[in-house]
Length: 292
Image (tube, rainbow, N blue to C red; front, side, top):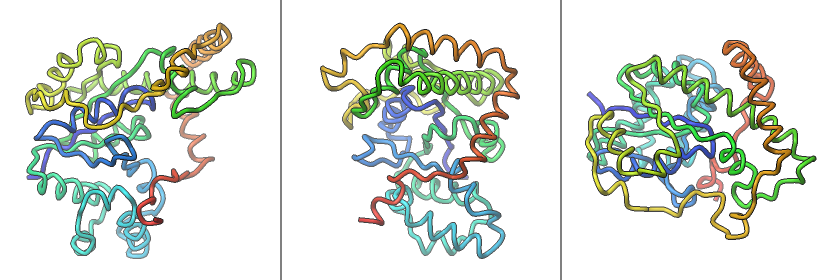
């Protein structure tokens, strides 16, 4: 029997990196990390790799998938042996990911492995089916502080209040979609726990103790040690002064209200349609180590 899978779910800028880094500090939880990602490295495995190469029963599809996956940063950082992975010849994406993560956790002497990709947040029910023994931790954040973080994340300078209205409206739609997905999935499953960014900030040890009790590994003080630079949007004192305008708050409230009027199935279907039109859009950090 392999290690227990743990998936952290939540929209970007909701505290997923902070939470995953804390849990990754537990000696029984294995996480694939990179300094340039300020800790936990996202796999984007089921949102990207599993959508891009077709059925892995087909040898041609498997060859294309294996060439891409075994050269990506996530696989290289795992330290897994490429030849051993190819010899195992997984026939499904779940089996492929499990092979890598179980191998990584076994070499780390861990009882759990943890994966965090915000793009997986809407895939909670699918992941629960693919990994019947998996546990899930969802995290959400107040819409106004989440929007503020998204606007100024990573040193960005957003356009003026009127010009960024489309960005604010899209953010409100995304926040509503992901909040409802997390609530629907976590409240309906005894394998999922939902926490808030605000509670984690107010009582970090208490929330981490509740999560690790849920995971069955117990609290460890090592989780409180900061091992990486904070993944915050507001390290710069000048950025800390950036606040939402009245127009930002109005646009956010309107978009949240409009999204709430839509039935959940309609909201999810709209998101699915957008994804199908966009296709698989690979982030530029996926193969940095190979390309260097």
